[in-house]
Amino acid sequence: MTITSDAGHIQAGPPPTPPPGPDPAHEARLSRLLRPHAWSFAAVVAFQVIGAVAGLAPLLAVAELGRILLAPGPVDPGRVWFVVLAGAAGLFVRLAFTGASSGIGHIVDGEAQLAFRRQLAARLGRVPIGWFSHRRTGELAKVVGEDVSAVHPFIAHAPGELVAAFVLPLLSLVYLFTIDWRLTLITLIPVVLAVAHVPLMMTPTRLREEKRFDAAMGRIADSVVEFVQGIAVVKAFGGSGRAHRRFRTATDDFVGIYHRFVRGLSVIAAGMQLVLSPPFVLLVVLIGGTALIVNGGLPPADLLPFLLLGLGLTAPVEALIAHGFDDLRAARRAVGRIRDVLEAAPLPEPAHPLPPQGHRVELRDVRFGYGADREVLRGIDLVLEPGTVTAIVGPSGSGKSTLVRLLPRFFDPTHGSVALGGVDLREIGSHDLYRTVSFVFQDVRLLRASVADNIALAVPHAGLDEVMQAAETANIHDRILGLPRGYDTVLGQEAELSGGEAQRIALARALLADTPVLVLDEATAFADPQTEQAVRRALAALKGDRTILVIAHRLETVADADTVVMLDDGSIVEQGRPADLLAADGEFAAFWHSREYR
Image 1 (cartoon, helix red, strand yellow):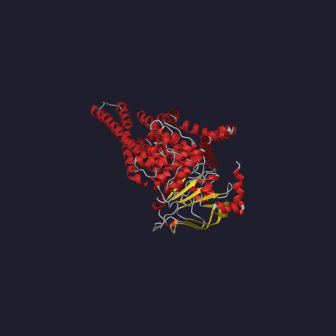
Image 2 (cartoon, helix red, strand yellow):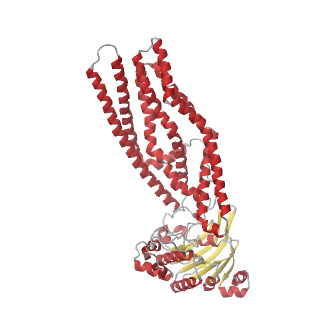
Image 3 (cartoon, one colour):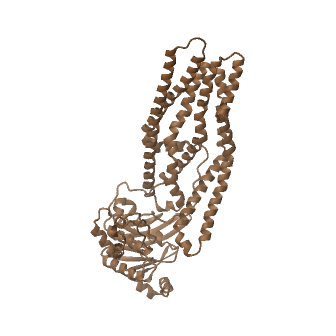
């Protein structure tokens, strides 16, 4: 199947609201997403543990060296050099293993992000188009772009930071307890005070503010996408003021939410940074150590390990809480949104696919609705014979686009069936369906690729002669030759095409695909009269035994059709040959005459 534009119009809707607090099912799904990288994660953690343990050696060496040198009596040079060499060796091992851990972590991060984006692209290509109608374009773009990138701290940094935050303090505590358990507990006071601030960051109010923050970011992304996509219409009809107002409203809302978000965190963050700061830690240790030394409970030389390791005890915790905590929570929320997209139900594939026997299309008692209370098609019975052109006409909102999108199975009917070659579309495998049906949208989106690649999108093995023949049939060959590098010109980079020219590229793409069923959603809406006539003549010559379904707004397209289907409010009100329907002087005749003098 050839698709030449966005897969349907994406409407604004409220973003899904995740439940507050940890979700065990969410954590299980997260582990499934990262399961292919489990061994790499294990290597990252193992290397980081070795690096953290070795990184303690220089601090211990300095502490022991101070105790040796300050101890009464002669100094043992051999012991001094042993301690120095042990500290240097630990530093070397730390650098080697933490560097390896960081390198592997970033490699895994790149692989995981690539896998996420591939999975998202594959899933978005398989979900029904109706799924998109409940989600904003900007939000989906944020999931594929920003949310996948937001997982970086969780994959590349979290294992190392978590290990450093727990392993290093734990080993330090064991060593300090062997020296003096009372001063060890005093040294832990800053850490306890910092950890006491954590629940203040997890209150229901904070969680609600996080959701509002994420929603505001989505609204900004959505308003930017809509403004950029509609800039031509906005300028043409003088709506720039309204468009700018919507963007400004989204940014103003975000600024207000961001201020509240930051204001709530600022006091907590300031308190945590204060109690974990080196001056505060040193002050606590010096006060406690001085009291013990004055009372004769601690040798003065034993204060040195606490001054050194006390800072090492709090530094990893400070880095995790001050910098990594918000990143990890943001990554968790991002993974939740990625998971929601990856778990969107695709259109089901048949267990035992059947190939279509021919390309006769039958719609039997078809009903379809985008929701339980929004039925768009009501009891459609229609047969499209091979070798015929069927034109769908009707007022706006009558269900024309929805009807034609059933043929390439963008939706499944909620009642009734759509059959191709005597086989229900739900029983035909995607591969066979895509080789049978081509679809050309009215609103064409071309890839940033060469003209030849754009035309050969559905048939990548096609030769240049075949591409040129399709372009000639679509009456776009001469225009392509006038581009800077002809068929090698990269669209969107070296040249821009008008709306009518883009439609002819899309039509050439569908013609090259050479599928027996061709669906045109007013594919010449932007073409000039001469080009439209040429395209109509080409389609008439190529018709053969093709089954062609056209959404028609122009009388010339309707007049060339073998059968006209008049839709109104989701139902077929008239059907027949154009001349017969005009003679009947019914709703189609009124539709015809209302456009005859435009």
